[in-house]
Image (cartoon, rainbow, N blue to C red; front, side, top):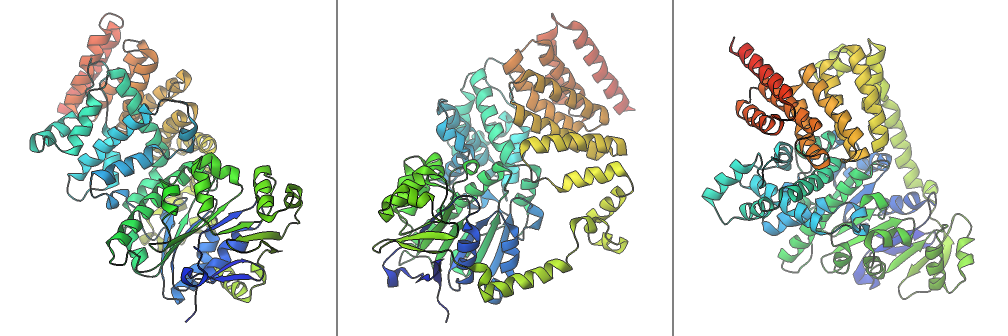
Length: 606
């Protein structure tokens, strides 16, 4: 039977069995951009894995496509979680599947709220993050009391949460839900966490609510929400119970998605350790090796408690290969924890680069001056193994490996048979019965503006700024094409991208979002308009004050929207707020809004 091996370079091939080597299988790879880290380290590891399970984080989908048939032939179960394009995934991921108690709830909420790497360098009071964790924990715990809960339900609660900013005490649209729960179980975790949030002063609660919303909005886009609902959902314990390869695809341009992947990995590691603890020998049934490409990408954020966890990897049968450009990246993300991570890898590979600190430390390990490391020719590397002298060698020649040549050639042949993305739009009419999207794409080809819209929609792996620009073009294209539903969808996206990029305190952005809310209402997209207006109102209160004309106009828009949605109670409550705040400053607006609401009711009666 083939044994697993670790290939670190030319003539540097080692057994991946700690019992044989006396070393752990943790490997840190340091090399500047373009130094061949993925090709010379990740691919050889895939070639030499036959017995362990793998979790492989990649920005290059091609590698997953190349090796899927290979591992299937080896008897592996191959899973794909594509955060960049969720529709390509063969499994979904629901964070709530791994929440079983109060500790899990807090762990998940903290992982989501604190996933942004910038938070560890912020001078802001950590109180705000902790308060946001408490608020999110209360919503997760509330959903957990429902039958068959999912994280999509949590996001629905987040979307429906609206704070009534004109009250002295914090009151919200979810108070009734928590009041019902309190009657059944007054001391439960959800009620206690919610009560903590409700006790906050109104301005504080608005800031906490905004902090939570900003974090979740950048993580759970509409595409990611599709991944939450995809079936079957992944079971992390199965990775350690049978030979499995999990490929996760991250976006090279959208750091928000990479942050979410690290939340997923945080849950994965927690589940693996808990499974190992439940085994009689304290070890996983199948060893698991984690390969993190671009592990220390600054936009990716932290894996929760990773420095503490890597110190204990060996006993349960976990190991990792961490690939990054420099030690500086690692220190930026993990601060003091970076040294703990470095100390717990018995193998370190230096492929060169221009980072001075990394070159200096590599020189210290090799007992050479820093310039020797900086001037090292491209293609050469240093291999450092605990208990051995450093080895200067060449990178592993992956393209020259006959096994990889066969794998890559087979992939090229498969790829050549696949239609291009443009060709898929022009699928034959007979295919429409199997793919509901084909007919829409075929119709889009009949109009230049529709073609432009579909082209932009297909290419969403972009930075937030690029998404904003493209969404603006989509709005215009759909408007010209007369596709009202699609225009409304893009308008809603435009509102939230604008807030995310320009900030929730920028008054010009708030003005633009307010115009979008009204535009959505005029298009008849009342539910989308309600989502935008409900997000806008607390921001207006915070920036402009309760009785400012702009804030009052948001209330007027909201009242009209609720009437169109036939949500009479919400319409009356909103009109009551508008009348109380605007009866002196803008009585005409109050009157016009009341008349418009009455007209809508009259039409509905007919």
